[in-house]
Amino acid sequence: MGLKQYYLPPSFIELEITETALAENGQYLEELLWQLKLLGVKLAIDDFGAGFTSFSYLSKLPIDVLKLDRSLIVDVHKDRQRQEFIGSLIVSCKKLGIKVVAEGVEEEAELACLSSMRCDTIQGFIYSPAVPRQEFEKLMIRQPFCK
Figure 1 (cartoon, rainbow, N blue to C red):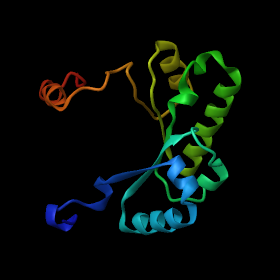
Figure 2: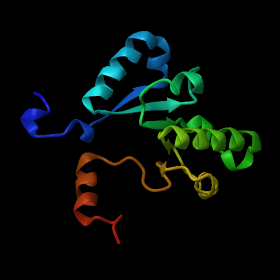
Figure 3: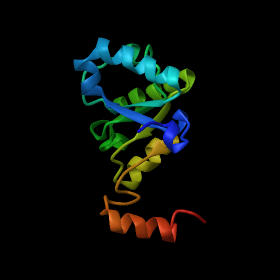
């Protein structure tokens, strides 16, 4: 089944590659990512900060989204060095046209800290725990996120 069969433009698709997969299969995935980007697919690197990929390497890839691993987010409001690192990363990503997503945000203080750094998107239990499909469907019907 292809995108044409469902009349979906490739830009509606966002594929996520974990940082670990990228580190282990760098050359192969780099070529594949460029091919996907040429098709118009959006690309995201997931779990950034959990592995060993350098930002300079990531800056050479055609990615649209960088998803920060929870390990970088936990108690970020208490760690000035990590705040500086994440803040610099967010600024650099913005300059490259890459959106930054903070994953695993659970505390109000983490949310406030990341918001002050102008992180593009924040995900985590602070908004909702994981829910079964049936519960998700009910949430979407009720649309509690829209005002």
